[in-house]
Length: 488
Ligand code: FAD
Image 1 (cartoon, rainbow, N blue to C red):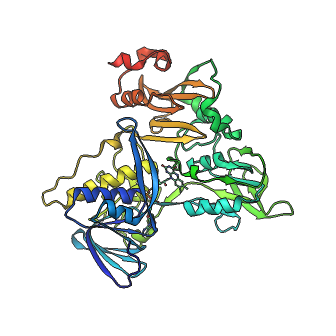
Image 2: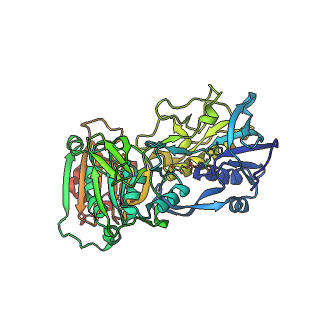
Image 3: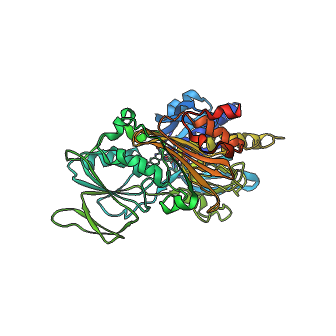
């Protein structure tokens, strides 16, 4: 990896900014698609993130690990990719699509085609307070680990995947979890799934035992309308990301023996007050309570990291709502020659019915690789831009929550479906599995599969094919009926 380089002028037909999953996937794919061309990867971070141990579970659902690697490992795999550790401070687009990037160390990097994969950063809560720690990367998890030593009570703020994983991992410390919604993990699951996860969330070590939990003989199957689901707090889920098991490498242990979890629902931190004799930090919540703690951990949503590219470039369109670089169905921004992928971008095309954007490793990898295909085709004299990759037909995500395997397919929380127009079908076996289907007009639109259900392929097919399953009634979730047989 190259780093120091005052005044150096570099040029490459393909330049990628960002050594995260999106930038690395994009660079790897460009190396394969355009072996005759150099690829320059500029990254502010010393290490790059690569997807390893990639295992397709179904046609659409892919499980993989995210590994931090030295830049040399990427160059070894892809000799045409050169990695330079430097931060971009300005984008100067030129006529005809080509342009120049200016870096912190004074480099000027001329590109033919550029892909911005600069990721996103967490929106911190009261970040300037010395007792607030925002979890964003390996470094911040390490800092948390150090600051937990001796801690008696930690306040965790946020209800996305990161907060969920943190609460699961914290040991030897009292945890007060402040969530904005009526149930935990709302960015991913509905109230019913949250209730299924609660025993594992509240009992120390329960998650590890989840696999061996005594199987309750009663299988509960229920059917709800969307209105009832919403009453129970299970409205459409949106929010921050979670996925491959970043947290499992870290022991997050406080200074106490056991762990006690208290959840403050439906509220946020209003302000941080000065500490008292008992607690160095005191948080006033919007529900009026004041909670003392040794440390406040902020794990709320993220915001795209794109200011340096947008500054001075009014032609670069950002999404009005989330601030990402708006891209079309070929990952092109509004500036010719500039593409974007991963957390930095906002998918500005007309989405397929069962897909929506969520800032996750899965989508960063898919977008990075697909952006490379579009950039390569764009560089061909007579090149035709590729058809959009099939992965954008349906949302898929596989992860672990509180020790359980969690598979999310399609509109798993009724996202995008008109209120009152869909229903939910449930099967739950306490401690073992939770299966939820979202149905509209007798067709499956989404699914949440918790536990080792082995149903992902069946429901993936039913969502994609939109077969009318109304004649099956509740047999659709009958564990003694093989639904596949109906459709062979
Ligand atoms: P990033 O991985 O953020 O990479 C951005 C890269 O751009 C970095 O290398 C950075 O150094 C570089 N960069 C930024 N600005 C510049 C600049 N100006 N010049 C040069 N380089 C620059 N998702 C999951 O699916 N599963 C999880 O378990 C999960 N856990 C998470 C835990 C935490 C604490 C956080 C914060 C996020 C988590 N996410 C998870 C979300 C996931 O990390 C992101 O969706 C994913 O990393 C996005 O990849 P990316 O390549 O777009 O961006």
